[in-house]
Amino acid sequence: MKIVLGVSSGIAIYKAVDLVSRLRKENHKLCVVMTPDATKLVSPVVFSSVGNCPVYSDWMDVKDGWIPHTELSRTADMLLIAPATANTISKIANGIADNLLTLVAMGFSKKAKILVPTMNHRMYVNPIFQENLEKLKKLGWFVVEPEEGYLACGEIGKGRYPENEKIVEAVYLLTTPKKLAGKRVLITAGPTRERIDTVRFITNASSGKMGYALATVAKRMGATVCLVSGPTYLRPPYFVDEFVSVESSEEMFNEVMKRYDEVDIVIMNAAVGDYRPKETFSGKLKKTEKELILHLERTKDILEELGHRKKHQFLVGFAAEIGNFEENALKKLRKKNLDLIILNDARKAFSSERVEVFIYAQEGLVKRIDEDDKIRVAGGILDVISNIAGGSSY
Ligand code: CTP
Image 1 (tube, helix red, strand yellow):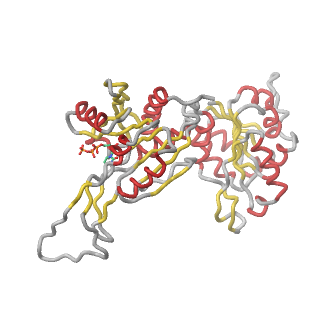
Image 2 (cartoon, rainbow, N blue to C red):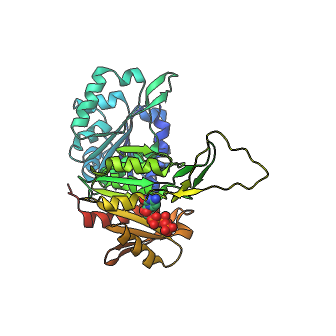
Image 3 (cartoon, protein in one colour):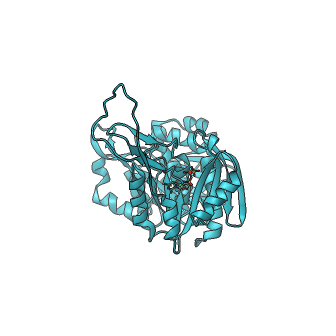
């Protein structure tokens, strides 16, 4: 992806240097356009070195007939302005093109455009500025909203530069083909915890990474995404429409069933506990010299129940096996009335950043996805789902 990164003179400009580095690592081809004041805050040499890319700031920097504002707006796929000051945003909204960045913006009217507004919180709520920002949103600019927090001026409020990871994700959000447009997808992730007492519980070894990757990529592909997650150490994926945090299998069961009629696709990735203590003690169990016997009872099988109640929904389950792989996976697919089951090796799946999966339908193997990072594997799984379950492309 060819990206023009516009940099205006917000104090958060130092964070844009890290953004350049991240975009470069994601293999985007960059060109940085700085406003004249931005070049007084950080030298163009810094951006050029970190991004291994050209940096322009003067609209008269014409070389051998190569005119920066027309060439950049013609050849790039995306214009991303971070940080975007109130001044730059308001100029663009009002058709003012008095520096190279606003000139490039003028020529970018029909392509992907992202703004990262960053400023003092009183400036941010100024009605004139808000009107300008709204105008640009209506004209197709995607806005990564600033965060609440401590600002450079020492005040606290909304105006902080968001995490660069979120801005990088916004680039994917705007540029991934929308194969799941119009689809409502419910994904479960992580382990469940079944309480023994107030401080102890039985759980599963699941990081939640695969389910979170599926939610991230389903959103990129245009779906409306609800992620129901057991306890994990991960932050909720950026831009998902609904994030529901649960602890026990019972809570997960209730949250999934509540939404079942309204969704088109369910992907049960959670490592749901199959057993829970028959009794949960309140407070903290005191140890004694005697052995402790816990009586466990079966939890409800959420996926099996979804299979029973299935109407229009497309149901996808996971099977983490340690032997008889194909046979066990197909048995689960049939027993739970699934459309697809994703098989992986339980000995590797939980501890690794990377995973290899086999996708089965009633008729047998549909696709093998070789070992890769979980985001790419999620993309492969969702491609198969979108091919079978459909989705309107835009
Ligand atoms: N699942 C569920 N509710 C449960 C248990 C599992 O919805 N109480 C779902 C998981 O999210 C996964 C699939 O069912 O999609 C896994 O199937 P399952 O037969 O439960 O696998 P295991 O729990 O690994 O069971 P087994 O010990 O039989 O291999």
